[in-house]
Image (spheres, rainbow, N blue to C red):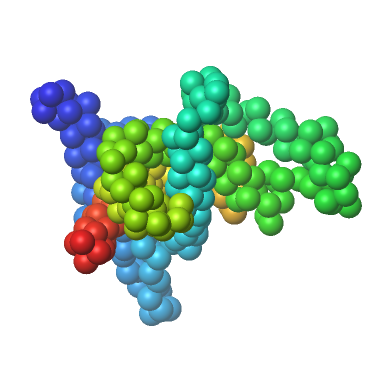
Length: 290
C-alpha cells in the first residue's frame, strides 16, 4: 500500500515541488533551470533603482484565490454540518418508509459533480432558468438574476449547489455515529427529566463529537481543493476563482508551469496547516469539555 501511494501520490508531489523551484515551461520541461525561491518571492532592481517585488507570495490574484477558497470552505462546511446534523437526527427517528427516505436523501451526493454543476447551471440561467421563474412568481425578486455571472451572486450560487450536493454526505456520516449510540444512555436521560434539547446538547452531541470532527475534516479537505464545481458553474470568474483553478490556469493555460507548480505546493501547505490547526483545536476543546 505504501509503495502504491508513493508511486501515484508521493512521486508526482515531489516532482511538483521540484518544478516550483525551476523556470520549467510546459512547452519544454527538459530545458528547465534552477531559480530557487523566485516563483514564491523575488526582489528585482529596476534601472531607476526602485525595487520590484515579484512572486506568488505578493501576487494579489493568488491571495484573492486563497480568500475565495477559505471563505467557500468555511461557509459550505459550516452549513453542511448543521444541515447534515438536522437530516441525520430526522433519519435516526422511527417512522414509516425510513429506508426509502434514507436512500432518496443520498441522490444529490451520488450524482457526479460535473453533472450537478451543469444541471444547476441551466436552472440558474438568467434567461430561462427555473430558479428565476419560481422566485419571480413568488414575488421574491423583481427581475431575473444572472446568478453565475454577477459578481454579487456568483459565490452564492456555488455555495448553494455545493451545500445541496454534499449535505447528504455529512448526514450519512453523522447518522452512522447516531446509530452506534447506546439507547440505554438516552433512556436514562429521559427518565432523569431531561428535555430533547438537553439530551441532544449534553448527551448526544458529546458522544458523536469525534465522528463529527472526522466528517468535518474530510469535508474541509474536499472543500479546500474545490475545482470541478467552480470550473463548470462559474468559469473565468474572479469572484469564485479557487486555489486549484489558479494553479490549473498557470500550469496549462498560461504556460507558466513552474509558477503553477508553486501554487500547487502552497495549496498543499495551506490545506495541511489548516487541517492540523483544526485537529489540535478540536482535541483541546474535547479534552477541556471532558
